[in-house]
Length: 474
Image (cartoon, rainbow, N blue to C red):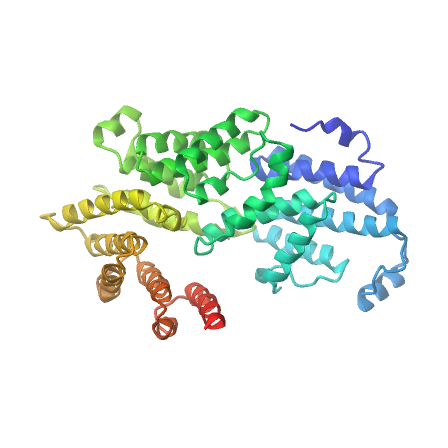
């Protein structure tokens, strides 16, 4: 994919060759999570820092301290020194990123935070990451990335890729599914004209819910190269969801199985996702795969990992759900693949396709009838009923049947005392109810929900942001 020789030949003498070479290896290490790749990238970054150091302004210890205290600018410095400071800062930031994923303990988290602080002190940006004591300004950051992507400089492609990732993944998974796809397409257009066979952001197609077209794009992406298999894993993940939205579970299983076998990003999530998809298939279909469904769920907890001493929230969720199968006579989860679809904010995508949403609603109502007619309900029965009500409410909301959706969400809230394990259902249902009221324009009810005692801090923050957005428009 890349002619690395062009970078290697000069990376000890040229700061930009050093930065470019280290950037490629850091991206590879971040995608593979292989210890050897991380070590090679870390060694290359150290060499790159040494190369950049040669071009930086030399100063005494006293001079460095006074500069740190006064935070003086580089306005009078030669252009080469300014470039060296920038490259040095970017190398430090790359080193910090690798430090976060290098091992699982808290020490790496602290080291990474210190390196980030150091790299950004160079040009006086002291507020970066909130979880290590910084605050941020999203709009300012996005505007800076837009400016960077528009100037056709060395860093414009990285700025564009970051924006594309934000609009097609971050906004989708961590937001309300309202990423700026028009902006994403505009960013892609000049690169697609120049490189018509290159597919930079497969998530854009899935976000547009043109599922058959998305599927063909991902398959083109798979056929385009075989050097970086981690790009294949991104496509597998997207293809798995494309088939899941259409309830093509056997095809979805194929890609979930490939992720389990090939990718190292999150084994716990991949195994749980595969087991969840198998749970949606008939007993005969599961038998044909040769998989042991119960054993798959039991494996999940042993596959958890930490990043910089922190547990991954989605892994914690999967582990908690899979513990139901640790019993001698396990009670099956109810529609776990649809539950994970909600966890990954998939209903905001599939909800734009009425045909797929109607089909999901039929599946949910079938499971609801089966649960209601169960002659010997388990201890999980109230939790399962509430889960189905929430999922049903989501489908009804996206189909425009808002009154019925509201009844589903309020039924979950009224059943709060019966819930024994899945306590997340109450704040999630409150949040979805708030979004429903926002859709109806009933701001007073949204504000009332915002003060509800059962909203967790995370969802209080989310509703606060929604509330600010509403109040700014009314």
